[in-house]
Image (cartoon, rainbow, N blue to C red):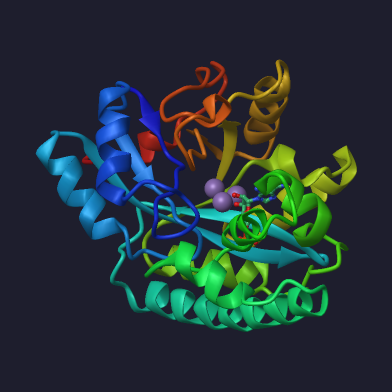
Amino acid sequence: MLYDLHCHSTASDGSLTPEAVVQRAHARGVGALALTDHDTTIGLAEAAEAARSFNMRFIAGIELTAQWQGRSLHVLGLNIQPNHPSVQQAQAHQWGLRTERALAIAQKLSQLNLRGALEGAQRYAGQGVICRPHFAQFIVDSGAAPSVNAAFKKYLAANKPADVKVNWPSLMQVIQWINDAGGIAVLAHPDKYTLTRTKLNQLLQAFTAEGGRGLEVISGRQLPGIADRLAVLAHTYNLLASCGSDFHHPNQPWQELGSFGKLPHICQPIWQAWPTL
Ligand code: AMP
Ligand code: MN
Ligand code: MN
Ligand code: MN
């Protein structure tokens, strides 16, 4: 059974609807899928229904933004109860922070002579959660950058002119929301934070001390050696191992649904915690 436990839809910064994500995952041989949109569960009902129609297993998920020692981090909540009050509280909190940030980003862009950014980004976000890639798309549309990547590099990435610092909830708070909702908190793509070995160990100590139980050992197509290194860390900290594509858009083969390597043998796959799924 192929498990893909990390992907995005139009509920956040993905470009396919939840139903279309499930359909694409099914076509690519995924047998069990978690939809994990940034800070929202609004896509889950549609995805769950689509998964039923394809006879796929479906795991309700979310990717929550947290902060630890001044950095922002992503924590997946897997197999949560989407209607649990703590999830509702988490979403409402993050929605507020994202709305405030969107206003501040638009203000900064306007000072850089890019007007109408809020409306522009909102058009891309639709009913979903507003994310920086929506601003990046607006910037590309207005001709100020040739690509989404370039728009990040020029305006939106950390310490660039339209960067806005957000007081994201603590790691402890985010893990608590997930645990209260019956889910498993998984530290997402640990290799993406550019942490030293020492810092990563400190992070994993804090993460496990606060109730985190999983590590994303495989995130899309990683460089060789990374999964083995993360598998050793998962083993050391007694964390369940997760894997996922982090799919956002078609035509990005490095994060295509179901397209990644197998978990190393020393791992304890997270789905062993879900025998009755
Ligand atoms: P947000 O959660 O609104 O801060 O947006 C974060 C999302 O932006 C990530 O999940 C990625 O999908 C996307 N992202 C971050 N950095 C880049 C980049 N340099 N180029 C393209 N997309 C990026
Ligand atoms: Mn994203
Ligand atoms: Mn992420
Ligand atoms: Mn993601």
